Picture 1 (cartoon, helix red, strand yellow):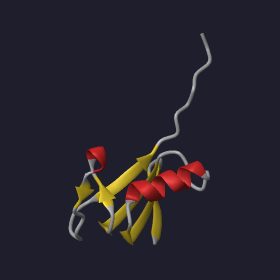
Picture 2: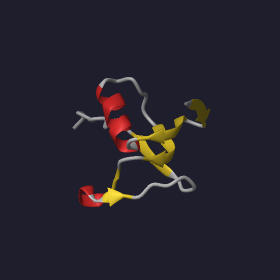
Picture 3: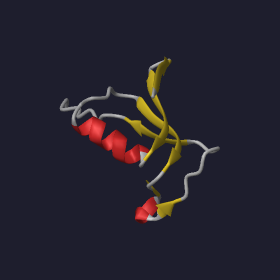
Length: 76
């Protein structure tokens, strides 16, 4: 894994993951990742598309998930 920062984005780059979305969700739930973080992989073994369709994810394309925490504004 290689980590770096670009402007306000924290980028976590992996050679291969099961799914960038699965990793991003798990890290966000455990708060192991900051706002505006990107989970990026060169390839995915179990990528998912819309409606849980299988997503073919060979090396050579861009696969990533972006974590943005929802901020609730209680001001009226």
